[in-house]
Image (tube, rainbow, N blue to C red):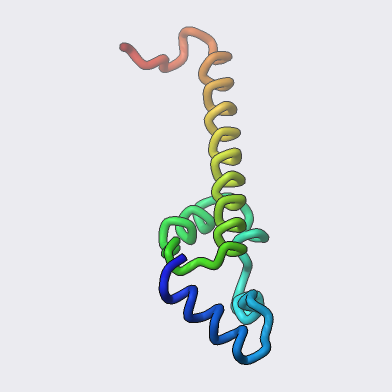
Length: 94
């Protein structure tokens, strides 16, 4: 864990508050609820992994898995369309 996360958790413990940061739930869509797509990809790419708590890191990994599965579905659909096109239509030359 980064020093910032350790400091955050220590301050929460001293204040008698839960270790989880509950404030971010009120600030927008949580990564765990963000639908796969461009916005999720942007959020994942801009996240500072060193600043995440273990729980947040878990949600980050799950969101990245959902995004990868979504992208794989897009790829499979495109390959399926490519493979089923009639051979006379705009096939790329290799």
